[in-house]
Length: 121
Image (cartoon, rainbow, N blue to C red):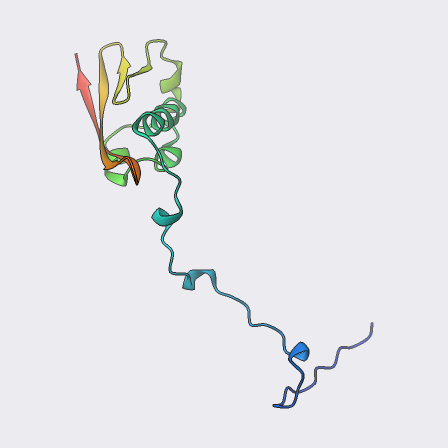
């Protein structure tokens, strides 16, 4: 195996001999919110509902705050309940109760679920 010899870089070294420094992605100034796609209330509710049915709390966090996700029990067998359905854009119905979704946001920035309140019949 041939050995690679590195030559010292001097002020007179051609630019092509200088390797670029590695970039550090943590130094970027954009926030996750600035690159997030717009989410309507209906789409946020649908994503949250599908995540709830699957017992997938992490997927729900795409469209909900930690506080909203923490307010519910995440059970993977919840989706087997035949009465579980999304009713409108702000209510998950199941026999015996439901979950009322509250949103923050607007038409320009999109919406996020900030509260998920369990309600018993």
